[in-house]
Amino acid sequence: MKNKDKETPFIDPVQGDKMLGAFRVTCGIKGAAVIIHAPVGCHWGVNFIERLSSVKTNASISALRERSVVFGGEDSLRRTIEIILKNRKERYLILLAGSVPSIIGEDWQGVIDSLGFKLHSIAIDCGGFLGRMGDGIEECLEAICQWVDDPPAKINRIGPLVNLIGLQRDVIKGEANIKEIKRMLGLIGVRVNSVFPPSSITEIKRASAADLNIVLGWGTRLAHAMEEEWRIPWISLREYPYGFAGTQRFLNAVARSLKGEEIYDGLPFMEYL
Image (cartoon, rainbow, N blue to C red; front, side):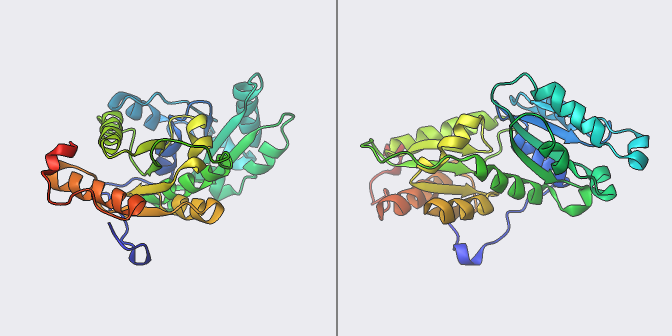
């Protein structure tokens, strides 16, 4: 665990641009439509993610052409949104604007606001020159906080709830990693409430019910936002709980934050695994 006042950036040895980071956060959220507002070709990442992981993407692309650089692509964006969302009862939209609309200064938020139906929307400027993949992940996770509901009234429940922030669902065995972390936490009486990047709108909405946010890698901006809005404390860990020692450090950090004490007190640690 690291000191929140002396944060060390999480380093990924291979990073793409801001669009890739935002897309990795949003592409598998059930109940939300993701639109990449960019030229043809920027949708190829959809195919890669679907082939390399168990994530089923929900993204479309506005398919800007060369003429859009001159005349703008706002009409194309409007038609794309209407086709995708017009017949939905619950409308959640995440718009990721690429380099072309960013450079020519399109008003994509104005397009969203002018639609003839009500929807919940998040729009992020993802021009490739605006940052790296990590920047896109951080900004998008923080933006999703606006869809979190206020916590329900306190009720009696068994054990504390935590959110896992920053785990990558779209890597090979990503979902299996999440399942195993949930199992390990369950052995010390801790349940997982929500995981970010989220799997569904429902998972986003209930996130404020957690007693602690656990940040693994990216997601400190989201953790800060939830601390300010709902006073949810958080810890940031520099490593995933791999191996015996890594698992021990992870579970002890969580137990120390929730219960004020470590679970490892000299007894064989394998009793907890």
